[in-house]
Amino acid sequence: MSLPARGGPRADITVYQWSERSLTGRGDVGPVATSLDREALLRWNSRIEHMVWATQEHPGDTAPGFVYLRHDHEAAVLRKLPVRDPHGRAGSTLTYVLTGPAAGIDLHLALAACRSDWDDWLPPPVRQSALLDGQAARGSGAERLERVPLDLVRQLLIDEQHLLGVLDTAADEVPDDLLVRLVEAVMDEPGAPLTVVGSPVDGEVVVHALAGLLGRVVLGSWGFATREENDGAKDLPQFVFVRGDGTGTRHSARRRIDVKADPGPPGPLRDQAARLVAFQRRRGADALTRLLPDQPMASASKIREWASGHQVAPGLMTDVMSLLEAAPSGDLSDREDAYLRSATAIPRIQLELDRATEGQLARLMALWRPDTLELQPYRHLRDEIHTWALHRCFDGGGPDLLRELTVAPPGGRVVFRVMEERLESAARRHASFDVLPLLRIALRIGVADSVLNDMVRVLVARFSMTFLLGEVDRISRIAPAQARVLLESCTGHRGGKERLNPFDALRRTQFHAEAVDRMAPQNPWQAVHLYRLLLLCTLGAQLGQRDVLEVLDAAGRNPSPALLQALLDSCRRGKAQDTVQGVVVQQYFQQHLPGRPHDGDHGSDRRGPRY
Image (tube, rainbow, N blue to C red; front, side, top):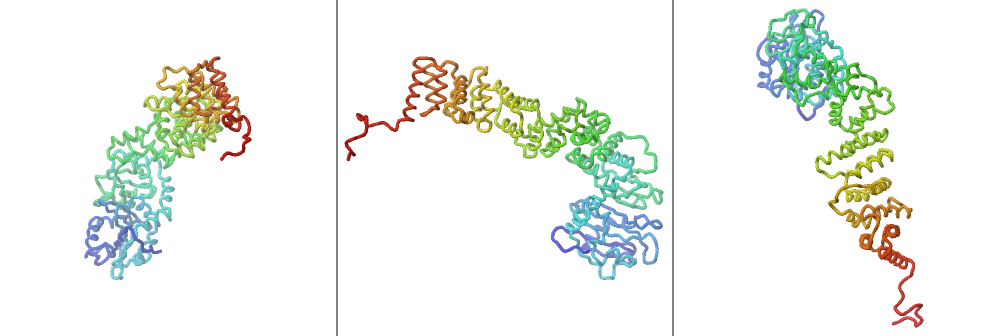
């Protein structure tokens, strides 16, 4: 198919083939068709002319080789097919070169291109199917090619044909021992040229596997040549793959790994490399992402430090989140199981849970349900997960966390632990502590009433009476029962000297009239009990005349009958009690007499209307 025209970045295509006179004016293998201008063609030709010959040709072996290289902000992918020249001589190539911005022709595109049929998107006159007769494109009218829309090439190769997924599957076939040796070499000498001799799998597959492990760890060009006759050509990319029979292999300064040769004594990074490969192959690419540093590193010492930092126990390189996700299914090695059971794992687990996203915490809670038998040996870790999930909810966490906490509410011990930690944190920061969000979340996720009541009693011991009475009013708006428990608990408060007068907290709310209505709906005698508690918390057990007047002033023009009854029960006999009874009588007449008669009249006006 042909790619449709489209805006956006574009890439250039150049075709190299044997010609009596190429676009550079020379005979031999050279450029015969291109979309590049003259200056760009000469620039790129100087970079790659020594590579267009270097492909393996052996009887019956006609598979293409690929090269990926970068120069500053430009990059190129070469596809080299062994062919015979028009005279039937072996050793020639038909080479396609895709050049363009490095941001578009990146490693992912280059690897996908190694597994694609280039005829899917090449201009029709220069497709392989049109050139297999060995005739040069020059003279066919195809010397000047159209540029290729790069975004559509990426869409075709990566999004539609899913070629990186194909490479993921193929990467599983790279032998562990070869991958470990390569990982060790790359970590030990970041960016250094490396030749692989006799790889049992295609070079692009090996590079894909390596880049999946170290692409965001080790700084390097990650350029590659997948099927070279030798590794002696000028300016070869970082990774070069040659045949295992040694044919044409030349001496060079490149480091070599021969698959069939003895690997020799392990270097300082062999164990870390083996653990990294084992971890990625056991836990997958997503788990590996959690280990990656912020930026690729060019220093072997920093890479060693990074690798050591993820060794959570002797012989165990992993990330804690992966272990927590694997535990519910019993998918742990003996070493991993021992690590999760050990007390030494707790600080590291707490650190990772603190760093976890809300989505990760919600997923862990879904996996760590109480009825999961495999988790019995690690049930102490469920409390840790719930602890951090509760903290996140109290800090304004999203609906996923709330949903999972509602499905499996944490135990009272965990709730108390979170409350204590938040209280201590507020004290260290000299910050006020907001009780309301804690109770709101606890109610929403279904924490048992007994636990809530115990929480309230703990709070009483920590705060001033002024603060507590203010919280009674606030909490009654969402949790009347717990507000009632808080008020009842306040009567046992043994706080020190109050900075503010607790009575002022009631003056602002007309002696908590609305809060009492919420805590004792349609229950006047319970309301009397609550008003007695408010009096006891602010003025004491025996009220005098002055106390009574303060309460009546705070209660407003129409004090609640329940409050008046509580005053009668709490004040001393004599003047204080007479004052309350006088208010009761006044309220009675206001509520039951139709209105005050005219002065001097004690019945209806018999004289008729006055005008």
